[in-house]
Amino acid sequence: MKILFPYFVSACPRPPEIPFSIVVPLKFSYEPGETIVYSCKPGYVAQTGMRRFTCPLTGFWPINSLKCKPRVCPFAGILQNGAVSYTAFQYPNSINFTCNKGFYLNGTDSVKCMEDGKWSHPLPNCSPIICPPPSIPNFATLKLLKSSVENSSSYQDTAVFDCLPHYAMFGNDTIRCTEHGNWTELPECREVKCPFPTRPDNGFVNYPANHALFYKDKAIYGCHETYVLDGPEEVECGKFGTWSASPTCKASCKIPVKKATVLYKGQKVTIQDNLKNGILHGEVISFFCKNKERKCSYTEDAQCLDGNIEIPKCFKEHSSWAFWKSDAASKQPC
Image 1 (tube, rainbow, N blue to C red):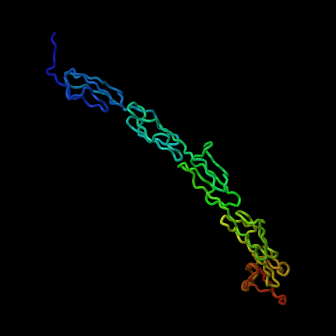
Image 2 (cartoon, rainbow, N blue to C red; image 1 turned 90 degrees about the horizontal axis):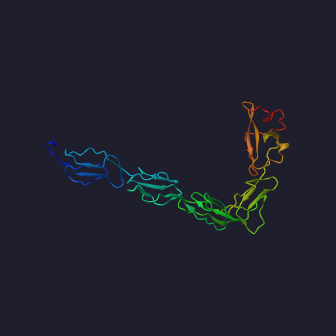
Image 3 (cartoon, one colour; image 1 turned 90 degrees about the vertical axis):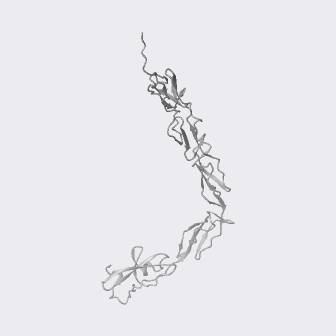
């Protein structure tokens, strides 16, 4: 039997490169019959294609469809109370972790997908930032402690304080657990005294019969008959050692007109019958004035201010002798 050989025998060149693979043995040329083996580099796995090839007599390597894909690490895309930054969960990528405000990272802030398809470190978690029990200022009591975690305080939890009687608070009565695990600045409680209030002229003032008057103590003011209190009836000792107001007693006004019809509290009344004792401080009466050209009447106001009242210049007191003249109050309104 006669064996046919090709006219020539050629060596095989250096084998084609496959991404993320190695060839054993790797040479620049191979004799027909020599065998090579492809394998994926550490961190990569073969998915398709042949791995072993023999150099043929033709000197042309067969087509290689081998593909080496990176190993995939377990899913790590959710971090409760935090965020995961990544491109892919595969070798040799890394992922980074951050926590939301008020939480701290319990573990590493970065892990890498290794050659064996496992993460380089255990995955972290976000734990709440805890503040120690709040300190209580001197001369204060804890009014309210709002905690979101049992028996401890975490970020944004609050504590509210009250000062003891006679003490005023300087600063915010509410402190807050911060993102750094400490509390905001404590308020200060200081004892505050006010001077004894002065009795107003033509009036009186009542206050607690103590050796001193303190923060939030109250005093009650009043006036004698025909006088009106200008200011609040009740005043309070403030945090800066002063009273909330200094009321005074204002005098009533005698109306320097013997006879006239006026508007008082929305009603037409006569001074001689209804207002012979005058009006109180702050009250207003309206006088009728004549518009001679239009033969009608209009009103102008006069207010009692601490015993003084100014009669409108347009008002002319009607004389009882001039009975033929009409009173301005009887005229048609303009």
